[in-house]
Structure formats: C-alpha cells, structure tokens
Length: 189
Image (cartoon, rainbow, N blue to C red; front, top):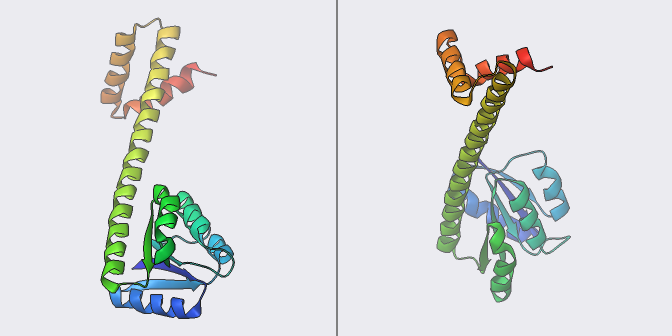
C-alpha cells in the first residue's frame, strides 16, 4: 500500500484531496496543514507521493516542494491557482515537482499522479543502478590497492598481481574483493 502525504492550508481542500485519492485506489493517507509539520514528518517517515495544495497556512508551498524533492525520493505534486501555475512551474520544474493548476480536473489530476509514479519508479531504478555501480567501483579500487601492495612487497608485475588475485579467488572459492582484503590485511599495517 502506497503512503500519500497531503498538505493543504484549507480543510476544504484537504477533504477534497482525501476523497480524490481514496477514489484512485487503496492508499495510506496522512494529512497536514502546514509546511513546518510536513518538514518534520518527512524526516521520520517515507512517502511514495506528496501532494501540496498551495497556499499553506505558514508558507506558499513551492519552497516546501523543492525541499521535499531534493531530500526524498517521493513523487511531488504542487497544486496552485491557474493564473500562477506557469510561474510556479518554472521555479519548481527543474527539481522534478509536477505542477497541477486549480480548479482541478479529475482526469488531469489522475494523469499527473500516474506520471509522477512513473517518474518516481524510473528515478528509483536509476538510484539502485547508481548504488550498484558505486559498489563495483569500490571493489575495483580495493582490488587495485591489493595489486599495488603485491607489486610493492612481492615485486610482482601488474599482470602477475592480477593473475595471483584471480587464481586465489578461484582456488579459495572467494570473491576477488575478499582475496584483496586478505592481501591488504597481510601486508598493510
């Protein structure tokens, strides 16, 4: 079940958003009225979707949407008046915030939610790929340090050090990174 945070300065707007979200599917909904409350809660709880109905009781909401987009992996939708939606979109669009103008068209709103969900999924996929690649880079650095250690202490050439690490990994049924760690523990203080 996806968690949704609704933030609206007016209770009428909040009620309307709760009804819209409930009609869209089975969501765990949290509702707030102020930006400061929202900033506190997002530090402790992860939401898949955050919808801000501007203006809020303590701020307009575009700064909050930027903060949320930068600090979380949540999809962010900012709802504002049609007259200013273009200006607001220019301010927040580069941060990945989707702007929807009032009055809300139910079809457009649901389309925006689908787009936010798709964009969020793609971002999470890229983030996971980034973590995997960072891990691979760390492993390569570790193996290269071990090669340099073998070259320094045992006077191996680079190909010999490479072959030694690969052979040890195969013979001991360990990963090259585990063999590299063992080499570094043995030769480095």
